[in-house]
Length: 220
Image (cartoon, rainbow, N blue to C red):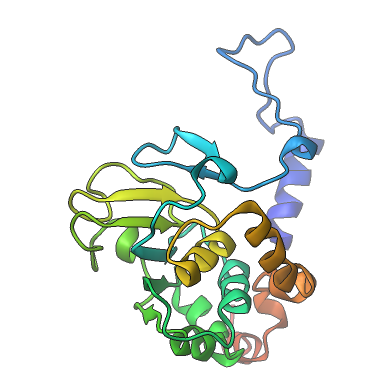
């Protein structure tokens, strides 16, 4: 990151960073006031562009939950762990697949693998997993909520209905066996927000002893 930041600043200083012309024309300009987003938004089965508010879809039965994909960073897995901590025998089939071995290593060391495993989650090997359906698939005809970026027909499984949402919401739906209500979400998210600074930490490899020690053995 430090290297990339330096490069970006160099490009700005030298006028080589690409930017739009002053008179550029766009097909559309979309402005979103985040202050107006007062509840979670989900993409509905089976189109990532079909988005609705949580209050519009609450109550729909959920059979399976997938928390994974390259767009789900380590903080999202910690957040799901906070929601699921102390819970077991959940009514859904829950799949957990960190995107990289590094995520899996840190989550294991921090105890989150144990928390997620005790909840009844299926701990998949790091990688795409259900996101591409290349390691496993959800049951035929089931309804699921996924943290992946696409929910096209048959992507996660045959004849399935797939919602897309956050890891926090997905974990709550895994516990309830349905899409939770807005009040339920707001109550449970307090557990995560109370420790947000720790939960949503990124992996800074230059601050993790194991990586620093290994890196020091390499001569450049």
